[in-house]
Image (cartoon, rainbow, N blue to C red):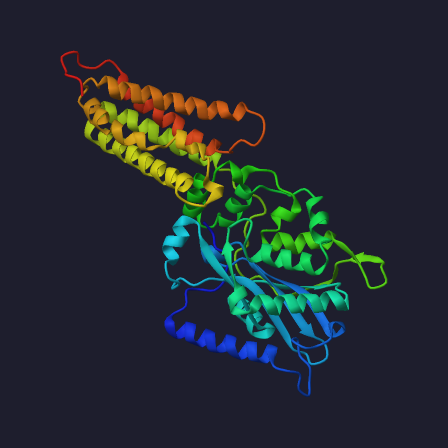
Length: 422
């Protein structure tokens, strides 16, 4: 799935440079107070806390946007952004951990002007929201972020939806505010589901959007509140405008004191709503089904090749979904009922498909598999009549149903009586 982190895979030289830069930054942050104060040692009354939100990028792992917490010493002018979106392709076992759903991300910090310059250069929007923190809350935030930045505390177990760069920022803000952020956001309904937000933001990479939608299980269709939907940086940016906090005198005031667009977006913006995949996939299924019928009648070899392509893809998808459910921690893929539509049993229908090319009868085993597959499709349809959270896989139902019906008809229509069973 997507990766909200912004850092590309570093080379060894890049990692060395990044390590030196991080060391210098840590030295600057932790250096004892000298003639002038800085973020690390300024009193809380001098610290300004802001939420920085970066718009979506072009690369697939940038499509969900990014964010950071900025601490600014209003006396010295020093400003540092802290973010939770760093990953390393060169980490030992990275690809295997990614496949298992056991990814590790890192916290990082950088001077604000350096960090924001990168996003401005690549055309991504940069927005600063200055937050109403008391002096004590600002100092607590600073102390927590500096603690979190230490190497032994910087790494965390990443999850696409519940532990990512935005949720870690959200949780840090809530912690510093004494837990006032969470109940207010939980009381507000979310606008979309995980599935809808994923499809919306990945729609510019249609092939990846389809793969992700196919792989998401019912977990992705649960209703969300604003706290959960703040797994997206842009949703967190929008929702905190509705939050109020108490100031030092105990009076309620908006959490966001002001909002400033530091750099406008120069890239193609994602759509406001998720695309409806039902009509495109239904049309694709009807076209393929008609093609199967035509080739069955006029070009049997092409019919067998097209049918084999479908069965192999259905089997491979089924194996992948089964692995995601049983052998990984990708909980958003568990319980995926698309297994009823595409499953490993499709491989066993290949011999029957090739026999039907020559109008030969198929075995009882193949007949049973065909009946079982049609029953599975029927069950997948009937599941939508159940109450509660039901996996919204109508596009894939519309894709699978016509094709399975045509293949069942071709393999089970009256065959040559003299042919032996497969």
